[in-house]
Amino acid sequence: MKTIYFDYNATTAVDPAVREAMLPFLDEVYGNPSSIHQIGRRARAMLDDARERVATSWRCRASEVVFTSGGTESNNLAIFGTARHLRGKGRHLITSTIEHHSVLQCFQHLERNEGFNVTYLPVNSEGVVDPDDLAKSIRSDTILVSIMAANNETGSLQPIESIGETCRSKGVVFHTDAVQWFGKEPFERVQQFNADLVSFCAHKLHGPKGAGALFIKSPLHPEPIAFGGSHENERRAGTENLASIIGLAKTAELFLKPPVFPRDALMRLTDHLISAAGAIQGVEFRGSRSVRLANTASFTISGSDSITILAGLDMEGICASSGSACSAGSLEPSHVLLAMGVEPDLANSLVRFSLGRDSTLEDVDRVVEVLRGVRERATK
Ligand SMILES: Cc1ncc(COP(=O)(O)O)c(C=O)c1O
Image (cartoon, rainbow, N blue to C red):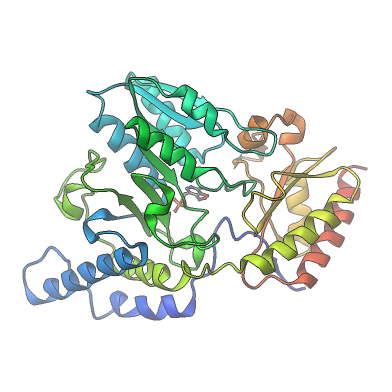
């Protein structure tokens, strides 16, 4: 049975060219970049070079690139670091109800434990934030806004440029989690988000896992969240994972411009998927048909739940995902769908298909055929 991988928003396979670039760093280039001897200096030179290469891809200064362990850490550093750095100026923060948990849980922690006040912006039924809502929510004590560039569950694209402009005009620091956006949408330079902080990770676009970066616009200097060394210009302590950093630099060079996810081809495939799957009784597309990542199409399945449907698909060799956190067989309804106004029962039945560069029309047709059967069996 052929395996069909429709879970590219969860992660992707490392590209052979990226793997090749990383190999020497798992072997002969083993030095610690902080060591002063020649073995360490060689590693340091490669680390500095990797930072320059990412800066060249992003068209920013090398000093504005901080390497992290991935999207989660980039988000944590951006949010905790900035909120704590600026707490003397104000204690009001703004984010949205559809953020990834690595953003939402930072805000919840700051609210519960550190005396901050958080506004969670709503979204419309297509999962998009209204920039006017943001403008109305900014107060004199607002210090940070964090809105994602593209949602991982529905693929909905957010009006980031205009949100960034509003924040700039009001003097508020703006962070965007662009983890799902990079490699999928047209990219020129990291400043195009109009953001002071931009989160990136490599494994969503054919780079290694555990490799991330945060763009921090100069001269902003968030407080570190890890202590124990002066690495990354006092912004992130810990011996650098050079092999992953080299992999991340290669990924940024190869796959941002043009995006490694072929947009037009993927839009044709997901448009077809949305029409064909949406024609199955009880299957409803969720998200925006037009303002979305081309690779992502999510559905609810009435009368069933995500785990049942995903298990049924998996038995037939199809890898898809729910947007929700599964633990010990229990399933939380998707917070993204709830925010879009979907009933809790239905929000429990999200099935996300996220396609990639190797996906084909035959794959889509097979997925639709299997989904029809799985849904029929599941709702009997
Ligand atoms: C939107 C978004 N932000 C952050 C993350 C976390 O990234 P990482 O897996 O690199 O920690 C993910 C990954 O699922 C994501 O989709």
